[in-house]
Length: 619
Image 1 (cartoon, rainbow, N blue to C red):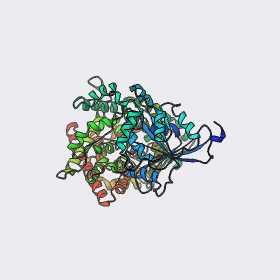
Image 2: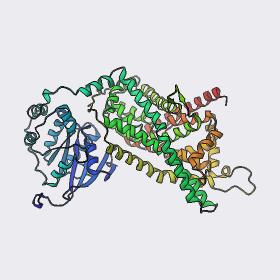
Image 3: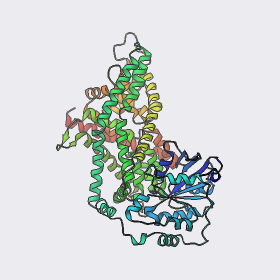
């Protein structure tokens, strides 16, 4: 390509738009790789993703990944942002110089309508025709040259799952920015226009449905076998969280222990050694060791999402949501809450009915987020025997599955109570079911990398900071010279724990647990490292995590451990979740009500669990 064809070498502002399930995220990841920044738009809880990349000819492109939208006639804050940015109405975002509209070749009938709306904006547009490999497998033929001439904009086939699948798109970006396409005539029927385009430039009308998709859907969406298969998938997922992650956890545990020895060996006994051993290494190490389990859980979620199975799970559970007085639209926000309640609450903004949206926000904290996983796995590993049931099922995995099941059942019951007697005006669930596909290893790796860096950044900031603070509270003031009890009993942390004890003693908590609950409000997983710090575990010989489990099993009863598990199923041990709830509802009354009912459920569940377990175990 000659320099005469190249535009001025200023950074090109481009926006990536498209329907959900169009392949937009895969294309964004392929183009920008790890050069991404993720934040929220000011004033709204809508994710803002921006990436940068350089074309083969050296052109710098700033690519803004706008939220997925089905139409510019917006019905949600997500679509509001996409519309306002494209029209140049957004308060903080410049209007793009170029729009890259991702259109799925496997669902042209739906996606071309949105493209025709984009055509009317008066901006240069490049059409990225995604999923061409899947279209070809179906036998779909597209006259790209004719379609390009009809639309008046470049149409570029892409296969974002392959490394060379975006080469042609990069070549087009290296050329002059195309002129805006001619607008459609006023009053044009977009649906009729789409039908004409499909009839003229594709052979879609002569094709039947995808045989493989039909066969899979016949089983996976069956009213009986579909839910049974979904239950098996979830069951296997929680079994593997224990089984597959354990070797990695053991290796990480040993590595942290070795690192602790190297750091602490040259240091004499004293305040500095205690700070590093009990505050930093014990605090961070006991949480970091659970990273393999968290990543394995996210690997399952990402793989199920990329495979096209999650929307079908939403369809299957629409009836379950109906029993809770909600529509299937609540499923996706609640599913997101299994990763973290914060994005789950944010995702509830897509629910148009105010009552259903509020109820979804109120029950989202009941879904078992990944931050609970370190607490669950610590206590399960310490108190539930590592043995199999029926020869193949791990007992520890069964208990973990039961905790998730109890949370889901409780959420459904809570929603049923909240919606009793109030009729919902929400329309029936309408979902686009994407074709099945093998998950892209690169996208999976990028998603896991982002989650790992996010988790480790929390360890390096919030968790270590809180544990150093807790170490200080546990170490000072020093006991008097004639003291006979444990030194920590005379510290501020010990005094705080003993003050809280009368409230929590009826549910089996000791004062050390009471102290760990306080920093755990900032991040649930901090409770694990807080326990290590309160118990003053050094890392000079073995890692803190390795020593914490046998220590708890020796000093706690099974009733206490199960009571703490029950507490974490329900308690809103996350200030960030309550803050986002306040931001979404704009009501402190709602937040206080949510905190009250969740803490009330937690206390009642722990009280019952503690005394029932004592009755069965005798102590």
